[in-house]
Image (tube, rainbow, N blue to C red; front, side, top):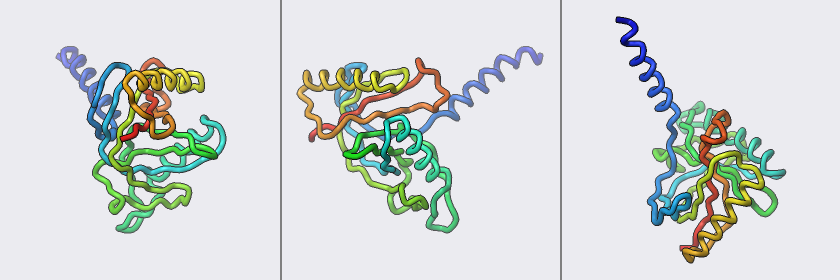
Length: 194
């Protein structure tokens, strides 16, 4: 009798582990879908962000630690003490004049008035207005050559659709560091002129 239930228990454990790994993403509407490209219209949301110098990899590592510290409790909740926040995806990195800006999107149930305040002065909260993005999805590692190749593909697709960029390309990563390269979801995102 026990042998009959073993496959069922195994299946349920797998199902639960996948559900546990699900994280919230910002809400958007697909305006145009031509895989691997999309034109998306995002709703407004709040981000926790930090600005860093250095190369892309070190800025990504250091920025992730800073902002992850905030969501895991390095904050001052309005009720006193600190508060943990749910992990979301993606983690986004965009070039700035003298470095990089890394941000996490905050859970959709949070607003600037409900979020705890970061204790680290290098982390700040910012509201993002509704906006549109051109996106290309790819798997593998986010190496400099992969980022350049995917950005070029996206820019060429945008030109054929007459989509005008309104800012620099951003690198969005959706997976934990233990995800195998072929299972990774990465995106290059370019803000669009309205």
